Image (tube, one colour):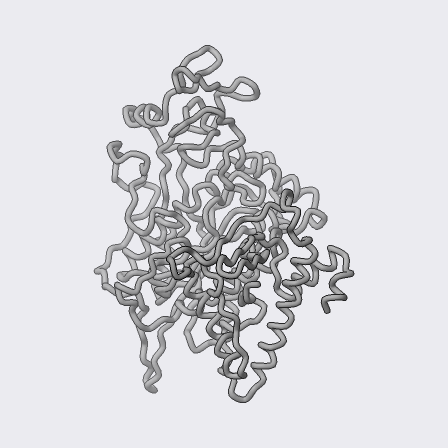
Length: 517
C-alpha cells in the first residue's frame, strides 16, 4: 500500500484520506523525546466542524454531537450537582441561563420592565427542582417518559418562492432579516428562559441552528420532557428581545467620508474634526430621551413545529437525531449547494443578504458603528466599517456568528471531551476482546516528565515554508492513511469475534479518532 500511495496524484490522495477518515489539513507539530533524542513530525487533526474545510473532522464532530444528543434526550435520572459539566462551550450565548435585562450593556441604565403591548402575557406555574420529564403509566402497567422535538422559526420578511428567493426582491425586508440573524442568539436564550418559567421545571435541551431555504436561521431542538403544545406556542408568541442600541437604519457616513482615528485624543473624529460620541455617551442619550424606542425588536415566527417522541421508539429517535445534526457540517451559505449548483436568483438573494449583514453592527465593539456616527465600545485605531473580524459578517455565516449547537448545562453532565473519551473506550474494549492493544493516546503527553522533573516530550509547531527537514506533505498524508487502514482493518476484524462487546451508537470506525502517530 505504501508504494501504491507514493505514486498517486494529490487529488487522489485527498480522496483516499477522506474515504479512510484522515484529516485532510492536519496541523503539523514536531515532537521531540528528550529522553531518547527521537524526533517525529506528528499530524494533528484540524478539528474543523465545516465540511468545506475538512469533511473528515466535520463528520467526526457531527457524529460526536449525535451521541451527545441521544444520550441526554430521554434521561430518567437527575445529574447530581457535583457532576454537572462546567463545559458551557455548547451554549449559543455566553450569558448562560440567567435572566438578562433588555439592556445588557450597562447595569446603571434602566429600562421599563413593562411588557410590550403587542406581546401576550406569559403564564406562571410553580417550579419543580427537576430536569427530567414526567413519566406516564398506562392501564396495562407500561411506563412512558415522552420528550419533544421542536422547530422554531423567524417571521416572514416578504413572500418567497419554492427556490427560497423573494418573489419581489424590491419589497423584501433585508434589513430586518439581517438584524434578526445577527441577534438570533438573544431571542433563543429568551425563549428557553420563558419556557422554563411556564413549564414548571428546568427544561433541558439539545438544539442546532440551521438555515431555512430563504436563508433565515431556524432552530431544531430535542427537549427532555413534554410541555403542552399550546403552552409552547404561547411562549413562542410571547418571546421577544428589545435591542436598546443607537439607531442603525440609515448610515451617517458612507464611502470615503468615514471617521478617522485621532492619535492625540485617542478618539474617532469626523471629517470636520468633531469627536464622535462614545458608546456610553450614545446609550446615555437614549436613556435621556423619553420618546426613545428600541433600535430593533426580535420576535419568533408564528410557525412552531411540535412532535412528541418516546424513548422506546428507536427508529423515530434515530431519525430525529439525524435530522437535528444533518446540516451541522454545512455553512449557512451552502444551503443552496455549491457555487455551480445555485441559480442566478439564489446567488443574487445570497449576495444581497450578505451585503446587508456585512455593514450592520454585530456588537457594541463592531467597527460598523463608525458608519452610524458612533464610536465603537473599546475603540482603537485602524477600525474600518465593513471589516469587523466577527465571523457573523462573512458570507458563510450570514449573521450567525454564534455557535451552531446549543446544549443546556444538565443535558448529559459531560463535556465533549468526555463524550469523545467514551467513544474511544468502546473501540478499546472491542480491540482488547480480540487481543489487540490500542495505542495509548497519552503516550506522548506533554505532562510526562523525566526523573528530574523536566518535561520528556516537547511539542513545537512546524512552519512548512521554513522547515527544510520536514517530510513532504505527501509523505505525511501517506503515513496517516496507511496507519488508518491498518487500524480500521484490526477494528473490523475484532468486531466479528464472538466475544466482542455489543456495538452501540458510539462505535463508528469512521468517527473515532485514529491513534496518534
